[in-house]
Amino acid sequence: VFPIPDDDSWQQSKQIGATAVDAESGILKLFWSELASGATAGHDMCFNAAEGRWESDAVAANGTYYVYGIDKGGNVTKNGTPVILTKIDPYAPHAEITVGDPQTTGWEWLDTFLETITFGRFSRENREVEISAWDDESGVARVEYLVAAEGIAKADITADTLVWTEYSGLVKPTLKTDDNYVVYAKVTDLAGNVMYAGSDGMVFDATAPELSGTATVTPEWAVGTDSQVSVS
Image 1: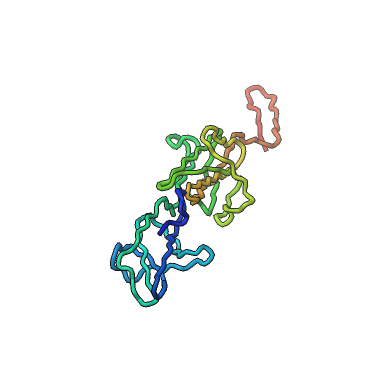
Image 2: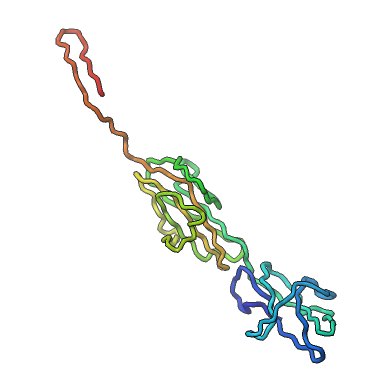
């Protein structure tokens, strides 16, 4: 009895593999259970003829499991053969996007992906983007970011046409004035789980408004009379 794959890699799930023989009637089937002994039924395994072994469906939790055999005469193994599955991580990592200093006038988004982008946040100064990522099981393998001028739908965020940039934290992306931004983060853990997070829309505007029109002056030559100025 052995794990599949039988190595030290992190996986989102693993399988239980086994080989078995019966010298009398032959093997009818194998099954696995959480019970160390006395099980008469459980999760049936399928025979993989190409590999010459019995295999379980995907198992998405670490633990010790026990494999039993039933022969064609109906005899059931009394005690299960144990197999230990480790380094299984079915959970997505976490991501937090921070723009500027949230303790003052900055903004932050934790494990958030907004379907509706409002562009209701404004800044007159450049701001750095910081992405924090962590994973409770296997650990973080890679962090990437994408800066867009408009929102991206959740159904489209996984498209191969999108160009992601690796984030190291040493050189932080800067959002500069006089443009609109939405920041996205992509975090992949060592088991291959992926988390996508996104900010809300942000407007960076450092340009003062301009008054347009024609100024006209109506002179009043009499002493003590105020001149009239109008802007239209």
